[in-house]
Image (cartoon, rainbow, N blue to C red):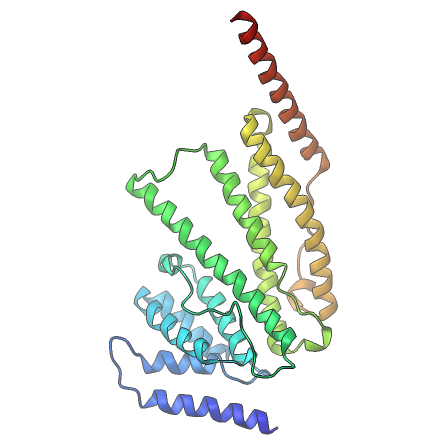
Length: 307
């Protein structure tokens, strides 16, 4: 009870200071107040209305993104409380999900939770959860920024790397998405007793993200399989690696979703069936790689004999 009162006092003090902060090109008291409310110390409830205000500002104008990220960064840099940290990460996740072009250009995260420590030594499991969530969002921001850079370069006609086939570009994208999925699957509570309203809400966000990325992977693989018998060896080797990885991830994902159901994660109970990669597709790629390799050996032998 004493800790809850102390945490409430911290939030009230922060709001009081913000209310007396003069408005300037670099400070927006309304934004800072919304950030504090959305990332309060109360682990029994989430202030959805403040979070929605922040998302609405971003959708109205890209000019709000920098002050929002600045206020969030300041709030996160000061905290050693896992509740505030996790709410901040959920808020950032929501910002990254806003479908506006400027979000793609955010670049590196303005704060670092890679070594996050809570003031309470008994919060080690929550610390691990926060660090895993941060690691994913850090990678996602980098991925989004790189994709935006590539798209911008194409629009301007800038060639930054040796030209690759469209299929190899797609396969590279699939490998990046698989890397993101691996990081997502590391975000999980280690003990059922640690589950509360806040952690369950965070897990809902994670499960939604998992299905979004996994569906993109499945759709990408489907487009590769359509061209299965017209691809070259290099493409076939990369595609084989992607399919093997997807088959392994499907098994891990099935176990992950089942664990989430046991913990009571709502979105896990609503989740669709996991699509598994057919072994026949993997064998078909193996056959193509073997066939092309033998053909290349035969061609080199003919050239050497003629020479």
